[in-house]
Image 1 (tube, rainbow, N blue to C red):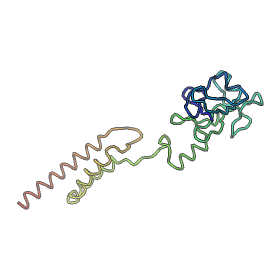
Image 2 (image 1 turned 90 degrees about the vertical axis):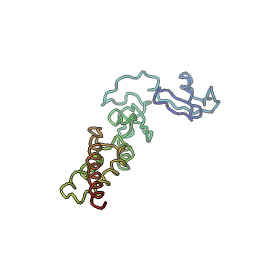
Image 3 (image 1 turned 120 degrees about the vertical axis):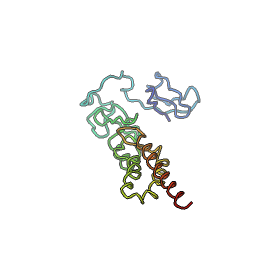
Length: 195
């Protein structure tokens, strides 16, 4: 078994992760890892021995011994999908969150909510909590419930992901201040009323 190291671009042993020397990759017989002695089976496409350069989107196959795209058999493969391992042409290659993925894997990850890079909507807890602190001021008696609730929610969601656009915690701070003043007002009222 072998593994491909995407950081260095080298073929590595799957047991010890040491790179397999390039001169051994073209051998037609089985290989043995020089570090751990594991038996390796390596099938290499000729494209591995060519230098890497810019690839055009419409790059077609030039030889029969080159790998082709899983989705476009007439196009040359430039990279394997990091999730499923299918070969992809430059058109199907979707770099996302440091990975190279095929369109199907991106759709599956989006459907299952597995990739944070695909998030395009978030619950804005800071706006909800600020509204919970301000709007009940119109009917002041409700603030006896909403003020402590706003403070507890602000503390609970302090580290929740905020807006995709701005990353400020100002709304949380403002909600805590307003709700704190409301709690202080109610405390003062109740102390003077019942003492």
